[in-house]
Image (cartoon, rainbow, N blue to C red; front, side, top):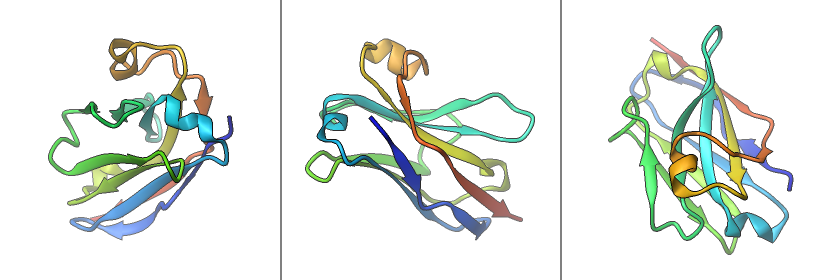
Length: 125
C-alpha cells in the first residue's frame, strides 16, 4: 500500500492548512490511519488517528481543539485540518496506516505498517 501525503506549506501563525493522505488502493478504507509529525531534533510523534470506520478519533494533547482528522473511504483519503497553527507545529507530517494493530496500539503510535513520504509544514511567527 502506497500512501501519499500532500498539502504542506508555509503559513503564518494563526493560519490553517489541510493535509491529505491518499492511496490509489481501496484497502486503506480497512485500516486505522494516523498522522505523525517529526520536527528537527525531535522524535516522531502521533498527532491524530482515526479508526477505519471513522467512528473513533484520537488527538495528541498539543493539537486537541485545533486539528481535526477525517476520512472519506469512497475517495481513499484521510485528511488533517489544522487550524490556529503555531510555530511549534512546524514539522514534517507523515500519514501511516495500521493493518494489524488494535485501537490501543494505534493511539500509542505503534504497529503502523505503511507510511507516506511526508509533507513539510512551516509556521512562521
